[in-house]
Image (cartoon, rainbow, N blue to C red; front, side, top):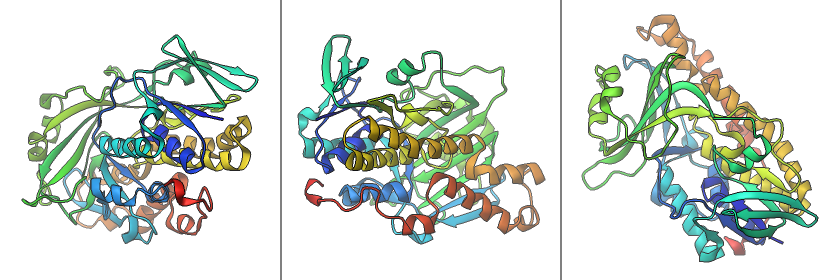
Amino acid sequence: MVVIISGAGIGGLTVALTCHQLGIPVKVFEAVPKITPLGVGINLQPHAVRELFELGLADQLDAIGLRTREVAYFSKHGLPIWAEDRGKWAGYNWPQYSVHRGALQMLLLDAVMARLGADCVTTASKVTGFEQTASGVLVTINGEQQVQGDVLIAADGIHSTIRAGFYPDEGAPVWGGAVLWRGTTRAKAFLSGASMAMAGHKDLKFVTYPISQPDENGLSLINWIADVKFDNSATWNREDYNRQGKLADFLPKFGDWNFDWLDIPDLIRKADAIYEFPMIDRNPLERWSFGNITLLGDAAHAMYPIGSNGATQAIIDARVLGKYFKSHGINAAALKAYDAERRPICNAVVLANRGNGPDQVLQVVEQRCKGRFDRVEDILSPNEMAKMAADYKKVAGFDVETLNNAPSILGKLDDKNT
């Protein structure tokens, strides 16, 4: 009995830790020769944090990230529109975290290596083929090595080879018409000191939040994203975590965004490094599971980075998959049940993010008054703002009352494997 996982990203590593918690043998194959901490900041919502806590990673999360206190929305002129508490400040039983994506991946990798052994993850090993067998699945690695397993989990990202095998005519990811310039800057945190701030509107937006505790000089690592929409005739570069961005391509658009709570041009200019990334996703699928093979994380539901849900949904995928391994066994029936539960939820999040998710509050203000107002309540009622935020939480599965009252996904477990 063995679960084969293609991909050692956040989703794949969480599957490995979940299987270990259930006493299920795992083999993880990762295409890159060496796993390094790529990316910039991400957020983990309370329902994903709950699962990582149940994997025994609470102390490690506090060591690498910051507990997010609030999310605050501002017009393109820096005027406050809406703010709401997050995590435990909002009444959740679990916090929300702002972390570096690469640091989270390395945290999960270290846990996998410590608990499952250094030979659990094999790098420079790309899944290049697969076939169903009477006893499970036969997986081909690098075009030559063959490995037998009970099931194959495709956690191999937005360019999943396994997804392409089932959907050969799908083509490239879907570009949303926007390019994201992302970076980190060592600076003093703003607002509450643990705030996620968003300013602008759908066509021109700036998102920023600290992802570390202040150092001895009072400086935190501040993550930021400059989001610029282009017309439909524009082209885009394939996404690459290492593609260097150029200030001249986007800084002029934010040149006068010096607000009383944050000097955005200064934050951008002082960045350690800047990366360019197109805003892309994949169209929702009608099916993830095919016999003894299923899709997970970005391979199943790559989504726009709106609403802070990409990594969160991959973690929930892994835990729900574990739930069905526990109840159904390591077989096609478990994968089918996982598919039936998770796919409609994730497809809805993908579509909600295309509709601007909770950030739609920015667009409404822009459309109604071009971002200038004396009293925001005259432009958008508090009830309207609260409803936009609440509706998205329900779609993404983390409205506070439902989550706090929900039973553990995996139920009672022997904690010897955490």
